[in-house]
Length: 193
Image 1 (cartoon, one colour):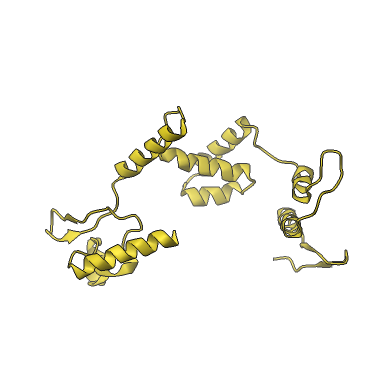
Image 2: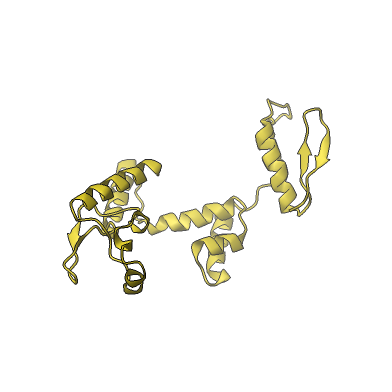
């Protein structure tokens, strides 16, 4: 993303040198920030490749990419990967919500991220996660996975960072103070937040 933004900023600066930089701001913002339309902070993250003439003012500006551009690129990616399903970019939004819930993210958090006004709208994704069999993973299964325990119970090398993250997550999930694992097997309590 940093590389993309650097490329966009360079294109914006080049356009400014040619007198073709800037974006259209809504009327009240244009009055409040008269130089805002040419300020880097107001430029589109995904601008159109070519500037165009604003039909109302006649100013030459760079607008955001057209929705159809993304849809076409998504369709090409589907064909290249051999996905035979009819879907569009909006499917990514549904997939994102479903994966968050399957990973155990709180439904209220997902509701806020998705911008849903009603919890019932977000709860539809809960039904999908249950249908997919991705509902709840046992904490024991998660612990075994993080600790790299083989199916016969023998231990592989422990990733202490992953282990501590899991302990912290389980502690937060149970609303208890986190237990910090020490180097010599000692434990000390971390203040609850």
